[in-house]
Image 1: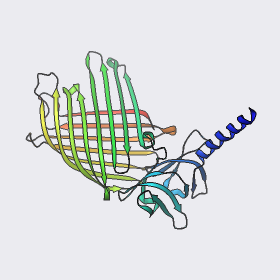
Image 2 (image 1 turned 90 degrees about the vertical axis):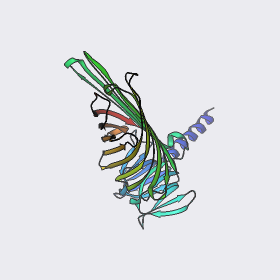
Image 3 (image 1 turned 180 degrees about the vertical axis):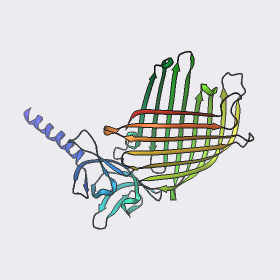
Image 4 (image 1 turned 60 degrees about the vertical axis):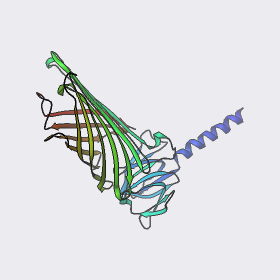
Length: 340
């Protein structure tokens, strides 16, 4: 019995040790880390180790050497998406990626904009998820406000799926409660040279504007104009179909075919700060002189243990709103969140 116990202890200890020593990172200052490389995103590489509850993060361009047998998903600055293993030629300061289909590819370190470990092969290995919540209470008229958001993306070699859900609920004495919710799901197909095509479904409701449900279905093609491990900028153009139901039901529904012009800008090489801007413009094709537009600006600051604080401004404008309603709608939110 004692021999069996010793053997089992040795097996599990060896498994646990090997799980954290399959990868090695050597920084330019001589720091050596052994563990599991999880991800390189926004100019920072993350490694999980057995001797710390917190993951280690190092600036990507400060890495001198990489030793790993793990499989990763890669995104390059020129738009190529690869799968395979990675090492670094320290003498030439080059990365060597062994892609499963394309073989050996040698690039400069700053050409790699994203890396994620996918050895497990399951959904959680490839998925990114974040959620945050905020709450405010004011003594005046007992004003209370609750906001929350959920973001998720799942990206593989040639396609991706991402979505978000935002909600703002507020109540105040002697005033009708406000319920503002928005959800979106986007499917993307990636092509060479940083081109992509996507289809999006967006659902929006806001009783303050008497919008029971606005459904927007769009298809577009786009391109990354800038795609580095510090910033990205992309734009897309397409067509959209919008259906609008109002409160009360006696109001006539509106149905429109619209053009779509979008732009996204993300800057993330500012220490732990992340800036994000997204603009969509929908000029109506079937309703004269109507243009809808949406703007979102988000600032996020990373905290230890995968927590973060986030502030966001969401603004929507309609040149031909429902009669008696304001043409614009905006909300400011602030909260603390966690990301997987």
